[in-house]
Length: 315
Ligand SMILES: N[C@@H](CCC[C@H](N)C(=O)O)C(=O)O
Image (cartoon, rainbow, N blue to C red; front, side, top):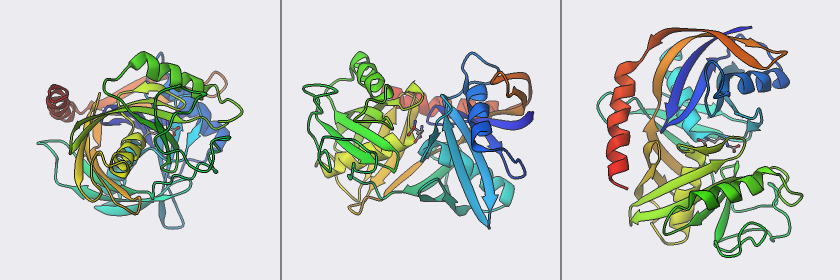
């Protein structure tokens, strides 16, 4: 089957994006498309697959991780789907309907010249770990070790509503992040739905740096829901403040975040187009091939590269 795709990214978290209005596939088939298109060894590659659908007058957002698992949300991806909706439906704000939540999106002034920018308001962040489930740790975990993961690091567990474990560190130990991320990926009995894991550094009273090992993917350049969860936990624990804008830097660039006391988190960041084209997916083999790129968005890529470079220099 052949798909028209836009290859896009939010803060370096990159995805093939499909306008799926008019495409009828079941969940298992979409999962295969995700594995085929997001495979870094294949024709496209990415951290997952995004699709935009429309039903009953609602714009619907769905996202699959590179391993083919469907996620409750993807806030870097939401900005990209929002941009597609704005451009194809001729609107500049909308409510996106996700698996278990809605996200308000609106077009924002470009955060830097040539950087298409979207604001999204997601949440409320929840500390209730009953639904994840994360078993044997009570109802919530706020700044305390989870002995089964690490004897020392103090974690906070947050649902955005996808599951996030956030810990604040003085320096990012990537090997430790991968070790803990992989322990969660093994879906132990006490954490059957796995979790995203983030190590966070406080850079200033209004700036943090987030590095994330994503469920279903591994280390990514950034994860929007992890940045929202981290901004919320930073305010909750007094490292930053509620109702104040914070710069959230990451390996792929940055977003700005504002966590409210009621758990809602607003992120503003890029939705960058890299190229658009068409690609075929072989469902039997879960492989992508015969890629035809119609257009490269070199100006957008260059505009974002400047932002990412400046952000890296500020860390
Ligand atoms: N990159 C995303 C989150 C994608 C889903 C995540 N890996 C999960 O399984 O929960 C984001 O930007 O939020």
